[in-house]
Image (cartoon, rainbow over all chains, first blue to last red; front, side, top):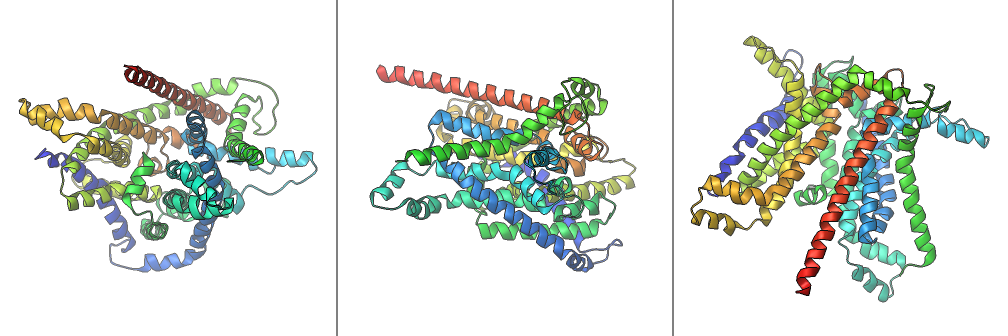
Length: 271
Length: 280
C-alpha cells in the first residue's frame, strides 16, 4: 500500500473547501464590517448579550448535571444486566433518539401547555394550573429529555468494562456501598462521564429549537441569537459570525475542562 | 450481592426512566387518533389525520427530497470516506494526526456553527459564480454538499477500526500471487473492511434523514421533512403532525426490531457453530 496515501486526496480537498474555508469565513466575517473593513465592533457588540450567554451556559450546565445524575444509576444498572436484557434496555433508550427531535420536543409542548395534559391532571386533584411552558424550567426539561441518551450511552460503554470482580474485591475488603461507589465505580467511569458531559453540554448550549418551542420568546439562547442574525429579521452575518466564533471558543473551553479532547474517546463512544 | 430492596428499587428506577422517555411519544401517538384538533381533550376515534397527511403535498414532496438527499449524500460520503480511510491508514504519523483533527471538527463543533459557516460559504460562492454569470442558488445541491460534509467523518470513523484489524500480509500475499495493487485492493481489502463500510453508509443515511439544523441553514428553497415538521410546529397546530410522528415511530421501531432479530439470529447461529466445532 505504498501510494495509497493519495486515496485521501479527494477527502482532503473536500474538507478544505467545505470545512476549513467556511470556518475561516466565519472568522473573516466576525472581524469585518459590511464594507469589508477590519473591525472589532462585532465582538465588542457581544457585550450587549452577556445575559444571553450566561443564561445559555447556566441552563445547559443545569441540564448536563441533571442528565448525569439521572443517567449514572441507569447506565450502571444496565451494565450489570444479563446479555439479552442489556440489548433490550439499550434499545429502549435509543429508540426515542431515532425519532425526529423536533417531534420529541413538540410532544412536550402539548404536555406543558397551560391547559395541557399535566395541568389537567393537576386540576383533577385540585392543584394548579401551573405556568410551565415558556419558562426556563421547560427549556431545561426539553434539553434533559432530548440529550439524556447521549449521557447514558458513553457511561454505559465505560461501565460494561468494569469487571465484576473489582467491585466484589472492594466489598470483600470491607468497603461500604458508598465507598465502592466513590472509590471504585466513579473513578473507573471518568472517561464516560467526561464524554457524556460534552455530548450533552455542546448541543444543549447551542440549541435554538428547544428554547424557541418550549421557552417562548423570553428565554433566548445563543443559538437563537445566531439564527436570527442569519435567517431572521435581525439580519447581520457579521455579528452572527462573531457570536458563532465565541460559541466555538466556549465549547472548546468546556471540552478541554471536561478532558474530552482525547480523540480515542470520541471514537470509542461513537462506535 | 444485591439485597431485595435494592433490586426492587432499581427495577422501579428503570421503569421511571422508561416512562419519562416514552410518555410524551405515547401521548403524541394517542392524539393522532383524536377527532377534534385539541391536543389534550380526546373526543373520539378517527383516522382522518392520516388521510389528510397522505394528501398533504408539501409533506410528500419533502419526504422525496429527504430520501433523495440522504441516499445521494450517503453514497458519496461512503466512497470519499472509505478512500480517505485507506489513504489515512498509510500516512505518516503527523499527517494522520492533522487530517484526523480536521475529521473531528464536524463531529465536535456545534451543529449551528457548521450550518452558518456553510451558509456563508454558499452565499460567497453565489456572488463569485454570479460574476461569471452562473446561478448558484441554495437548494438541493447545497443540501447534498452539506450532508456529504457532515457524513464523511462518520464513515471514516467506522472504517478506520476495520483497517486496523486488517492483516497486512493478506494484501501482500495477493500481490505475490500476481494481483495488481488495484485488484488486490478490491479482492482482499474491500471484503475485509465491508462491515465498516456498511456501518458508515447506514450511519450517514440515518444522520441525513434525521438532520434539521444544518439542512435548515443550507437548504435555500427546497424543504426536507425535518424542515416541514419545523414549519408545522410553528404554524397553527394540526394533528397531522401527530399522525406523522406515529408513522415515523412505527417505521423506526420496525427497522430496529428487524435489525435486532437479524443480529440475534446471527449470534445464535454462530454460537451453535462454535459448539459443534468444540464438540468435534
